[in-house]
Length: 170
Image 1: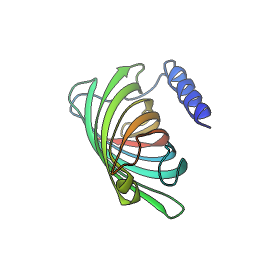
Image 2 (image 1 turned 30 degrees about the vertical axis):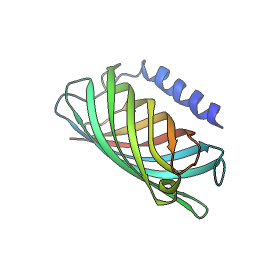
Image 3 (image 1 turned 120 degrees about the vertical axis):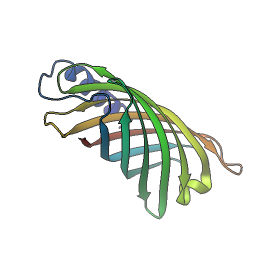
Image 4 (image 1 turned 180 degrees about the horizontal axis):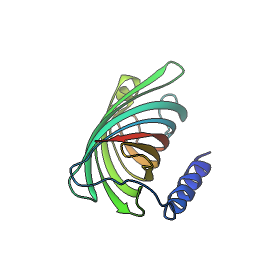
């Protein structure tokens, strides 16, 4: 499943290089994103590996036409296990078409809920594409890889996430 998500994200990024259209992120823009996620968490601690779905909300500010900083919050659950995340991140947006931004980024997240009992901190990298066919709205597709630091004797873990969502810019 993870390979399918990463392969699909790669295809979307490559396909995006040929899309032509209407609008693009620019210096001074504020971008708000809402994403849904498939989450594959792999570790040897209590509960072992798990799959879950999460909802993610973030807001970012374009420092230049390429550099974006932002903050976000996510909530998800898998059975009786819940997760709350708070994080900050940086994205470098590539100018790949009139309305298309392929990007790479890095983020740091802290955890609450049941996941906060297991992990202190997560840090990782992401790659994706943002398509803005309308002046203030568009779609985004993202793949993220994270390393998670265990808490209280829980071993470290890896996390792979596949996101799809909508973006609004002002």
